[in-house]
Length: 154
Image 1 (tube, rainbow, N blue to C red):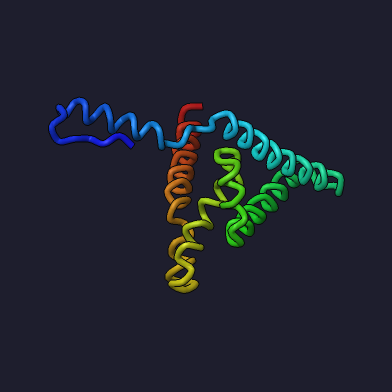
Image 2: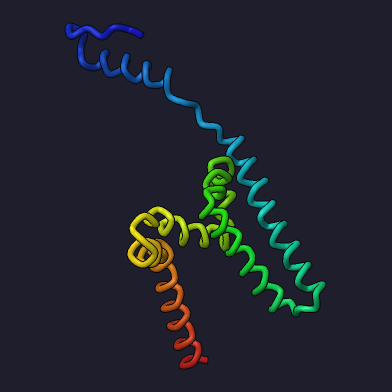
């Protein structure tokens, strides 16, 4: 490391500091991050498609199979979040784990798991909708307003 002396002008000390920071700062791995986000997000989507095909092959309509698939994906994401597996996958895949339905399930369960030491009611129950609650409220209110606008202006 270069030694910075007090007699040097402040501008030179700043440049020396910036040079030292750049030497030790980790380099971003954008290509690797994009690759794993694509692979894991794609695998989650393929898994969803496999469940959809499975349920349709069992005689469910497309709408029923879609509901069953969503339920299974939410359950698996919540289960893997509770077991700590989802976080490990997210470390590798980053944004690839935010496929809408699994990311939503993770955002609901993660705060609840963080506060599970406070008990089932005051910990898990109270924190379950910490992140997802506002999303649900604004989604429901927006859908309600859209329905009203549709009703009055159709």
